[in-house]
Length: 300
Image 1: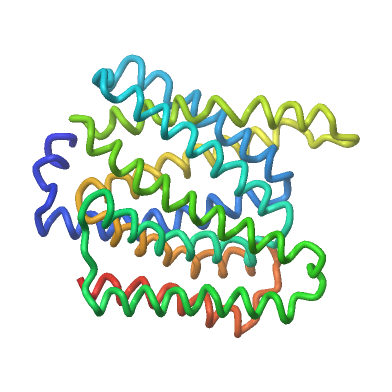
Image 2: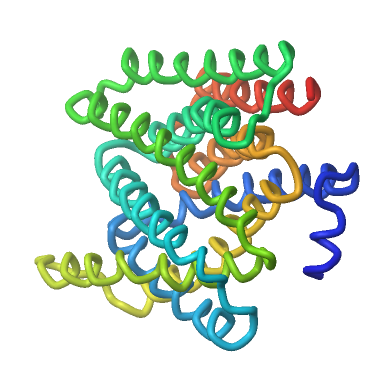
């Protein structure tokens, strides 16, 4: 598997596999976001998920994949710090706004910063058509933000904070996407990066979630929370793993933009599962974000 992946890097086959992986990551990331925003406190859910994937990754990191090369340890340290800040911002944003408010802005803002980061770090260039696609995507994002500001009066007190945190979280989405793409390209075996990343990344949030759970007047029962964490851990493996492999096989900027078709999946999940009011205008604006991502792919 590893040898085959390495052999198709930079080829047309690699491009097609990266396209599939990016779309798969889009769907799974929408599921992941809904799990974190669902019935439990977002901080508790994130802690349960991180504990699950950290424990599941440990035996693979320690006993299955090759150990990281010496130059990888500073890279893992940088990734740990970036992801800690991202997760704190994400959880904070979810405590301020509804899933269908926060998620599209986070995931839609990220690609713009990621495209810029891919140019600075990897020298990737977009065509005029692809930049048009980015513009379409951004028009959907900012249209959605304006719509929320005008019509969501029930969340007026926290909406500005939710949108601000969502944009800032999107910046860190782009930062971890480009940085982790650098990291997975810096080691010979991509699965070494993934296994060690998940084991290290699972350390920070569980203690915070536990302390928050202890301070609650009416803390939730642990078995359902643990089950949600276990499911989220598997989703995270495939979601993050898919997008990271896509960035190794093909262009980082394109993979980052294509993942943002997750906004369509998010709208469906928010409506069907979380019972949030979406409405035709917000669905259209979310679809506009996804359309921009499609234009970026076709214009490449």
